[in-house]
Length: 210
Image (cartoon, rainbow, N blue to C red; front, side, top):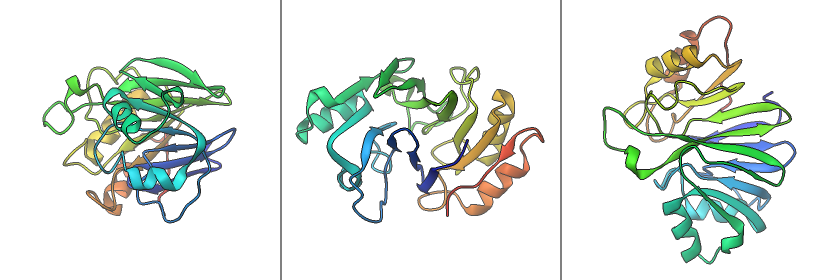
């Protein structure tokens, strides 16, 4: 399920399966310009990075983004035909890739407010449901997520920490859980390792960030 999937840095994920998909490209090392679809979870600089988008997008790249990011892309000259703007609970399809926008917000801090309508995503590829949680705490809107693979923030400060992330993952019970949102801005490799140590034995924890 994790073949051809990379966690590049922080919360930046590349999926190279049926299509080339990036989620929140950030600190991209060089110009790839190979993205079929770019998913953005929210407008903070470490998730919506214009310079990194330029390194991965090509002429006909599609974007799936929250409403406030759509406005930014339009100002950059991206065609409206190439943008799907989403709100929480939106269900759509692009280039034969099914996706759902899942609410992502804080409950005990104010970095990611529910009213911002920022999101995570479930992306369906070959019958596998990949859930990228975005910047979120445990909240009532994500406790019933059904997925096979979960990419979850563990760095704390702006999101759930590794203990909360493990509690959340143990509740939704994916087959595989991958820690993200650590190692550069907040969080450490030890957070990722501690997260995996707290997972139930029937959930495989996997560190993909190099």
